[in-house]
Image (cartoon, rainbow over all chains, first blue to last red; front, side, top):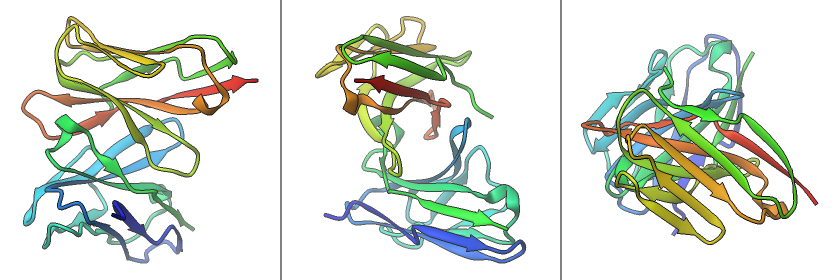
Length: 113
Length: 111
């Protein structure tokens, strides 16, 4: 099994550009989440999903959109990139949600210039 | 914003020493988790705790779910160089599916 796969691994965007960070899992997990990691800030929850067709906001949702049309995929869309969105983004999935913990991908390092 | 206070922020220790770190909150948590992150990788789950007072071990790692449900502790015994990394606590609030993370403890082990 590949686990949680994130693409791309690295990306540079210009301010105002839009893009989609891809996340796919092959473990048939119902729960998926997106986090961003900034130095000294730990991991902050952006959006999460408890199943296909269901999404909800986390701590820092502004500037990001998500959708969950299939169990396997949970893309994160940046609508109009800003330098404040420079960060490392992690996608994670779980069989039974937060209680059992999440399996994380290896991250996407995004730089907005 | 962040609801977990993790300390210390960083630790520099000698190989063979024991390590302790903790997380506290003003909120009550249903579940406490401890993760380790190696450079360039995503966090990996080390230990999960589900009951107040619960003490769980994973090799040289021992974690405890605080009696008040508002804190948790992680101890690493006889540290080795491969223990280097960032350790995160994470908690699930009652009635929520959100998993909230602390800011991490960066551990450096000198051989």
